Figure (cartoon, rainbow, N blue to C red):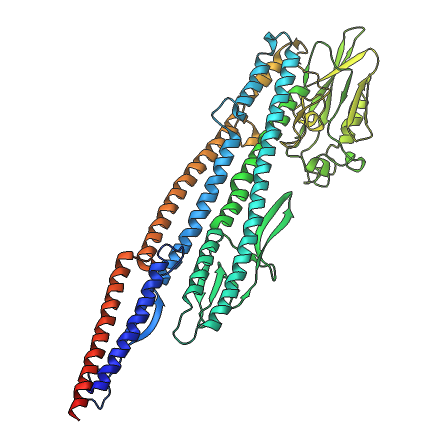
Length: 573
């Protein structure tokens, strides 16, 4: 090997150590930079010439400067990010939901239900029982409506968050596509555009917090990004995402779709996934259960109240259900009769008694009004054609001497007693009086509009089967209603039904809390693993700095020695 070769080897060592020092300096400068990936200068020995008898080698060269990253670990970290934000978002929703329900305090729905039923039981001992019962009825109706408003406000807040985060995610997808293009134009040969790749990974990290994604690196250095199996970013093009809302059966379905052709995306994780799951799950389910409570409370209270009386019987009664003229002649159980088919409750096959009293003589008569809703015609065929309509009921009542029945301009059943007569109802096995809203306590159909009737007359008494008057029987029945099994609630009583729903929310909240804690620990562990692989160690870089410094010094000494040897040779010439 000649002195010239030694100089060339030393020169390569100088150049290599300079680049090594630059890489080390870059790492030290970015030791605290979020998202920075440690760079490593990969050295490669240069092969010597085959004409060299010893083939010692020709020095050292930088093979490439590479980001130190474990792609499999990075993908796991992005998935863990999605899971953590999904669980954290659901936990946040459950915390808000528990605050709205406020169960376990004296200001919860369970307490309101107990107070409402208790006031009926205590009505016989109160000086102003009617006023007290009405006020308690207004209190629970207001409580239910306010709770529904709070739940709707929470759902709207979720809707706003979904819109905002979808817009944010769409912008991130577009930015990834743009960086893909820049990287493919910047990288030449084995050289990596490290800063651009770090920036892109940071964007993917932000994106993974919003929605679960997978990435596939292309030969050009770009990322193809998928939600599920659907590609969103391909090379330098982003299809974009958008929120789609479709009304169906009284509910609004919310989905995340591609912006270019409206393909529906399956979103199961990330913050957006957590919001969608919470909206469609916990919030909508609680609203549905609250509606069930309200509609069954309305119907069951009204069924009892409609057949109640006081010592003074009725002289007039106005229903609350508005039935269009076209539907008045349709059977009550006809699916085409939307005024009744859209109700959350329905009358049954049965009937009721109308009691008519002559106020002058004190005598009374009892007339049975059948309600045929068996769905079978006179030939025994399944059909509603000859079943009872609202008009049939009106005509039957109107045919009773001393009573007139009609539909007012808004389609409500109006019953009036002639002068000197009064009337009442009893033994309604069909529930049709409660359905039509005749002599009822509540009006409305569910938690959206439950209210005590403005014209309500509280009915505490009831006629016994033998026709005798029992002053407090209706109040007693209403007081016991809270613990009575109700078909519309799956055989559970009202208080138990809501208690189970509240417990379910508490259990789901506890589960969400556990899952959120677990997801945090998993993400934290993977974050630490990534830091071990890709993070900058000050100690390690200090050692590298010293190594390259010594390499540079050694190479300089070789050059000095070679120069002295040259000088010696020249003196011999």
